[in-house]
Length: 475
Image (cartoon, rainbow, N blue to C red; front, side, top):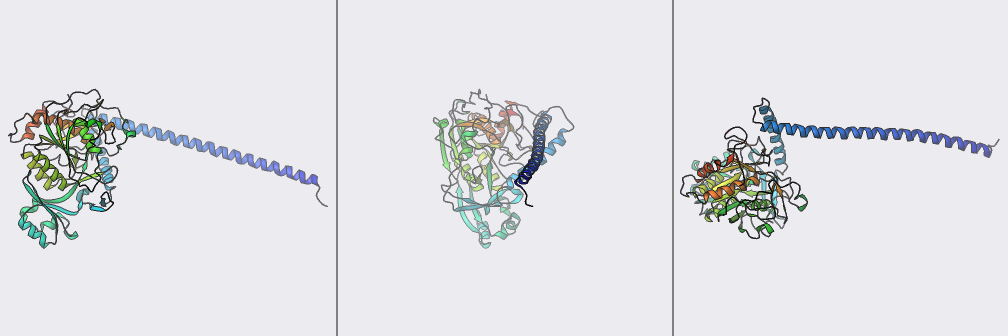
């Protein structure tokens, strides 16, 4: 018997009803899963929010504890813990640069190769510097070393040879085996040095107003004298409106083969001599001699070779500047130590950045040399910049967090780092040096004693490894 159409219709209705029930059940399950997902998502978001609040609260508690003048038994433990975390973080950040990094010129060709060396510092691959010495030159020839240049620096009264060694000899112990003993303390790598501005801040108009200027009402310069100051940094955007009436002379030492970076130098020069609606120069009548020594590594990173630092110091000595601003840092280097010593002996004071490597970092140079004035950074509430180096070599603190200045993009904005604190101490030093007895045996020591008379003691009473002798404020 064949099924009737009525049976088909009945079967279709039953199937439709079953499908509908199945769809309803599936829909309910989907709704349940969706609600559960929303519930879980809400829980996760709430946990993230609470974690962020807890982290912020913990950071505030840590900052208050570490800066509290009352002795707290937990302070040392917290300091050590924070220091170790910071040191680990900085090692990771520094290690993000390739161990072997070809440095390209503007045509895309390799100008030289930058490599990671001892203590995680960086240097030009297999390049060394040595005081020129005839027995030393003979020894280098026997080692099959390539002599790249022999240069006389008249201002510093020193002559250097730059050379490249075979890979098996690319270490200080190896070279000491073959070079005369009297040259062992006059030999070192062609190390790489870095600007000390917070590289997380991109120099762009979009970022320029991310923070409120720390002291937009501070309008007084340190002095109105026509002082001569030097600066070793990146190049400067001299076309910026902030420098329309400034006296700036720039000399490039990095080489025309590179597109010179300008962000860091523009910011530092802006604090020293820049003018704007909210920007008053520290030294309005100064003549700024700016030595450009940095080559570009990337959009955010720059480097300067040891050899070019010597060239810059020699030029500034010949220009007879009163003080030299070095908002840069790197490893200890025997050639740098000698060049710094000879520069100071000519009567020029040097002010340098303490470094942005964190509380547990090793001393940064040239700031850590005895006769160099080392500057750390604080914010507008006189709290230490969290990434500032610490140590007995710190001399003074100055505003270095959210400092309003010129930017190479043509506008104005805020910059942070121990680099940005250095210009304030440089300005004060220049005003003192211009009237001081230039025949003083140690002009830097004389200037430091004068600066100490105008500081606010922060942290532990007296000199300490965080703030040095105290905070120097703008007039």
